[in-house]
Length: 100
Image (tube, rainbow, N blue to C red; front, side, top):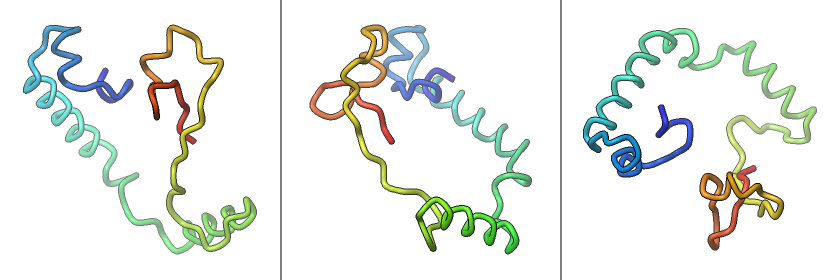
């Protein structure tokens, strides 16, 4: 869960929690399969035509006509980032950033 929540690596889990890298990966893999089995049929399917129309209409209202999918991410420097969050939000050039 730590790998998913904070985007940490398996090596960090090994150092912090004393769990082997392979054990971390196996636990993540089992978690992914469990979530997919529980929610896959309901949430991981292609949208229906009516849903697509709603999504396209909403996107057009927001100024993104014919846009369906994700936008490119951009990193904004977080100059007032609290010291306790610096390591979790390190981005480009070693400064804290927020991804938008």
